[in-house]
Length: 351
Ligand code: GTP
Ligand code: IMP
Ligand code: MG
Image (cartoon, rainbow, N blue to C red):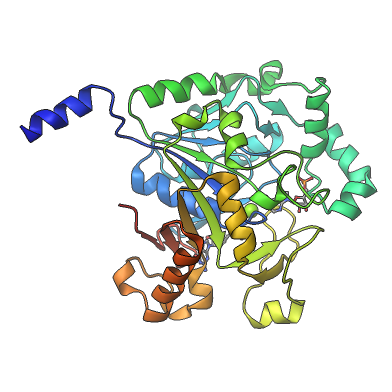
């Protein structure tokens, strides 16, 4: 009888494979790249698709002794069987894309770029470098994203289907995702930046050039909110920020170093500003993204003896209490806990 029920569910529409969104909960650099890389390998995802702004983002993934720094290719690429897509809402810099393909020996046949994705040209980067507003006041990454999005709003930006160099990659990303959903495939949608760098929800004007919360991430890749099964919001155990703008509870540089919280930007190499974990921002990020799960990164930075732990039972009492306290205060299950730089230094508490 039970078997018949299972066969029925399998055959008639009950969806078995999830669509996951991964979004940043603070100011970017929460470690989304490592979380996406881990999920891609662990769940053997079929598609990893990049939403978000564009190559202003830097994601770092450590896998099999190699460090991959990615600005354009989705972080799930370390799982060799997954397709790597870039959605229509995302900006592409062909130079950065080809550089990553070559450097990391990515099979170009795995990559698909939506025909409507915006294209960053040299002039966008030059315009940003010349802007003291972006350079000095905002602390922009000067990767051309803001200027390209401005041109897109004016409808003068070139899009991927118009660019010869991108021809081999051009596809209809929404169609590919819908077809995968209909065939019960696993899809991981990778966001960039973090909730409080959102053009709408951040500390304007100290923000990036578009909204980067879960709602917009759906639009970036061409799915509606009802296609999403889980929204994983990523928080680091402390908060970092690069560039200008408010950072509540910001610590002085010597204190950041004393605590071992110093980090340098993946794209710009700048020392990141830092502050302790912020509950007020975290709760707001949970609502803004309708988070259904939380991933916590860098637990080992505050509990060094827990470095590299891969199961809940192995964690020290203090670390467990810390996580349970966070979970109680935030009211959302903490399902992924990262304990070290390697992609597999993670605890998976998903049901
Ligand atoms: P996103 O922009 O959110 O993807 O984060 P990021 O990749 O920009 O973060 P960053 O460049 O700071 O890279 C994170 C670094 O920390 C990478 O080398 C990761 O492998 C490493 N890392 C990720 N999670 C952990 C963790 O839990 N503990 C430690 N010690 N390192 C981690
Ligand atoms: P822009 O998007 O390059 O114009 O930068 C605008 C602001 O967002 C600056 O403060 C940048 O430092 C910040 N920013 C943009 N992308 C990232 C990112 O991926 N991680 C962290 N900060 C970012
Ligand atoms: Mg980053």
